[in-house]
Length: 248
Image (cartoon, rainbow, N blue to C red; front, side, top):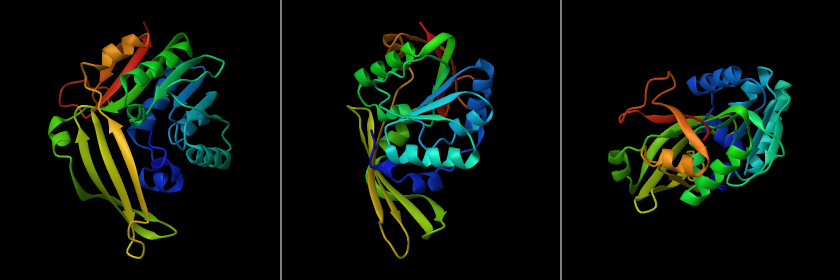
């Protein structure tokens, strides 16, 4: 589930500051649906806090106490009310239903086993109010990129930490084809502190043809699938699978 990677919540936000078209898309979907909103794998609230600031009653569930603590701090700083809940998206019971449920930023791909994905979808199904929708985004697997995951450490990106200065991020990935899981090791370094964080991160691939079947086993139906945040129809070369679902 990537617990070690997400224990560094402040650094995570510096690496992945949020914003952009994904936030706009999920805000628009929440406005379209109205009512209560639930985000699973909410992290530090980069998408849920803006939705809550639009006036929607919001709840966020995450397995990382560190990420939830940072989300709570950020929401309090902005004066936004969100119900933050610790829990596992594979099986949860929040005691109410929601009008819009979403899982953003590949968070669903921390579930590696088909049974775990189906269990998650069944839990989502139980939390959907009449007329509700479930939306998530995952990357569209590129077999050429997966095949190139050879375990060699390569520079990924860099960011500035106000406390440490310039931080470089190197990643070494291998792909386990039998499990459909990319197993990576992330290295964060500064000139003064080489490898001050070294942490694993394992992400599953969900291929386009298996996704509707997994959803149907969880009691859900794929209504629409887009290939980008503008709503372009999904095609084989699309970077993401942006999926809109409803109860079957």
